[in-house]
Amino acid sequence: MSLEVDIQKELGDFHLKSTFTIDKGIVGLLGASGSGKSMTLKCIAGIEKPSRGRIVLDGVTLFDSERHINLPPQKRKVGYLFQSYALFPHMTVRKNILCGLHAVKDRAERTARLNEALHCFQLEDVAEHRPSELSGGQAQRTALARILVNRPKLLMLDEPFSALDSHLRLQLQIELKERLSEYGCAVLMVTHSREEAYHMCGAITILDDGRLGPIRKTKELFADPGSFTAARMTGCKNIARAIKMGEYEVEVPEWNVRFMTKNAVRDDLKGVAFRAHYLNARTAANRFPVRYVGEMEEPFEWILLFRYAGQNPESPPVWWRMPKDARPQHFPEMLGLAPVNLFLLYDDS
Amino acid sequence: MDWFPLWNSLRIALISTILIFFAGIFAAYYIAKAPRAVKGILDAILTLPLVLPPTVVGYLLLRILGPRRVVGRWFLKMFALRLTMTWWSAIFSTAVVIFPLMYRTARGAFEAFDRTLSDAGKTLGLSNVYIFWRIRMPCCRQGILAGTVLAFARALGEYGATSMIAGYTPGKTATISTTVYQLWRTNDDAGAFRWVMVNLAISAVVLLVVNMLEGRQKRRGKG
Image (cartoon, rainbow over all chains, first blue to last red; front, top):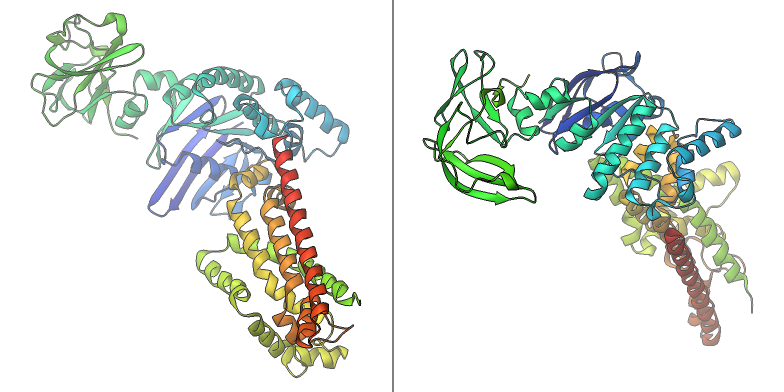
């Protein structure tokens, strides 16, 4: 299984440029709302037509603007789980799933596959219910069953958890991940939530304002975002422009500090970033005087806001995040940052 | 009492409603998908009969279908068929007058239809014909049903254009509404009143049926 996408789509002022190849596992498309994530999925499904480019799935050309190929969605063998699940409201769960079995002409086989799906997805008890009577989890399972009985080569999930209550989300993420690994087809999942992407996806690509970044392993991406967009999307709170000063030294003019780095700095350095919980009063490295400016309380954590002694007054305060019981009694005068925790940011490509 | 006007009104209304049911739905479906400029122009043209006085519609129809006009003359020559002054001439006038009612309610229903449902159907491999009749239509049935009933009720009451194109010939082209007018005009007040009551009864039954259908649908929707 492999999917090659190289498309462009113009929609008014918005330009989408998507180029990527995936072969297996769950790949996440992480981006803010309005960044063109759903549009990318719709182009692959054939619901929207790209302005130009090429989409190839398992050697079958789904779309090619130069060769004037544009397969209708019905022939693409691409499953699409909509954000709202798009269950047909006037049909029962059973009939909804039967819609996915429309191509199976043999009645016995159709019934067998329907019953298997109802069983696998634990929908036997609600088979005669309508979508309006289902819980969020049941609705998601119905939608997924309806798609998977059709045996798509590629499954696309569009914000699959956004319609659910937050306490259900994590549970369903675990459940869905298990099902998808059993089913074993390639999955492309769109989300704006870094937690969801982290839980579900083996690899992630970040979409920013219509431009798609490289596909990277999830763990590596979070451990070293490498670009401003990736740092932001993976939840880095402290991001600033920086200049290379030496092989292992950078200056951050905004904060008026010089950091030592663990990795050698490239000449094209654009900035640095670090996560809010990596700061430490006892770390000797990259230790600078700080001034407390405010705080925010979260259910299980404190966020303390501070400024470096020489920090530009225009620039926003720096975040320091810690578990509730780790909050120091007095705000320290100096804070340090281990060089290994300082991310070096380069251009987005 | 001669029941011909009742029978004649019912068959005219029924046939024109059936014709307009399909015509209105297909016009609504394709115009809802059309580019904006085309949509605006077609929409205005198709809605025109709703705002024009029925006599103007009747006049325009006579200009086209009359025995000395383009279409009318052609039919007369080819099939020796006169398009006006027969009972079924009223189908032309009624259909034109009720078309906007069907078209506009159907279009409203289609525009409110959740597009992701038809997109989902496509990605599941369902044909466009299946999606239209088995998903889009059932989801829009409330609006379409309302439009159909409204069109039927209006068809039963159509007077202006019908009287111009089909005239009033007792036992041939008389409908309830033209009969009421004739009887009243000839000072047969009791006769006019009887037909008024008949008309009221039919309209009341139609509206009751709509309410019943809607109630049943709501209950079914909730299970």
